[in-house]
Image (tube, rainbow, N blue to C red):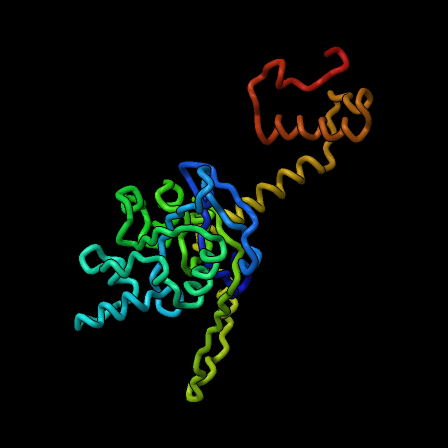
Length: 278
């Protein structure tokens, strides 16, 4: 979420059918050394297999083995591009244990080991046609769509929690936050602008003149309506005060007078004033 200039960073996105779409998964107590994470296995009792899409980003979720392999061929590995492009991706990009670098990658690699699951590593090169058709320019949002479509069980990366992503799937609690501070240089040569009475009009600049005109008309109409209802008018034809109480009778009398004088209505049974004979 956002509060002032602080916004949470999401470590991963978990699907609505967390850790499995086709078949239900069961948890059991892991052996000692699992750091308290529940182990997960499928309906057949074997360790569960989950599909994880890694969002390649330097210092966050990195694949050093793929980078080294790419460099060995004399080419430069580009984070967020090489493993995410079907034309340049290499087999090392799709080995889950290789995604163990970066502050999120290292953490999630240990989590997967502790949970005893088999991980099918995916990258943005595996985006489905459905996700590519989503109306968004963000690959992170496309990954959320993949979870929604059931093509991916888990997205791993530093996700911003946005309303669109929140509506698509479940997200973890933020574990880190960014604080933004804006600075500007003060120009010592700049002189203070001279005071002018016209500066008092600056308060009207945020809105267009038509907006202020509508505000003024609204105030006048509301004031006039309140004055008519609360004003010192009496209707000799109305005896509602005697039948329903003084206060309610005065309100009804003034309201009917307002309808007759300010808002003339067609003469009908519904429009005529109440009388003792009605």
